[in-house]
Length: 211
Image 1 (cartoon, one colour):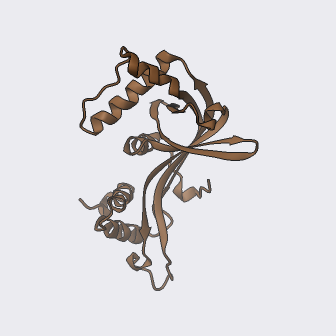
Image 2 (tube, rainbow, N blue to C red):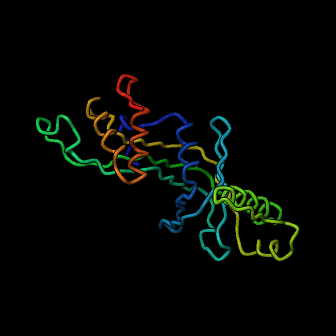
Image 3 (cartoon, helix red, strand yellow):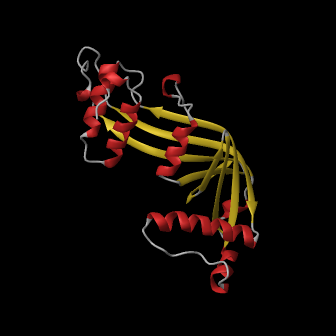
């Protein structure tokens, strides 16, 4: 990922928040020199700088036979930025851009197919998302008709050893521009635009932050 110094984020708490916001990620592996890409939810664990991702594919998915190095892309909020929002738009001849937050997590991918481990994974994933959906459905490993369906999936673990966090939030602009863009984005109808505004304001000096 192209990562100018101005946009580097080093605080792993920012990664925690990105994944908590949206754990539906893009998983990229390589087979015979070609990228293989799939999109799926994951479970995320971090202890200090140790990061583990777990998830599963359909057993029929060819990526479930891949191992070795892999990359997961976690997409955060993103928003269009109009040059009209910059106070110095005329003298600096400003042009449109896009602000966003994204993470690339690289590591070693391993595969598992044990019934107990798959059952635990499905139980954790469904508990997380059912609670968010306001539902009380639970995976019951003791039910034969549910447990038997585990034969249709393959589990994976990704032990992350490289993290790239890119928060492109106009850090290469004067503070007045950053404050003005944050204010404009905060008034946009798209929720993602307002989320970008919050990220921008969190990185402004206190004197420029707004409630």
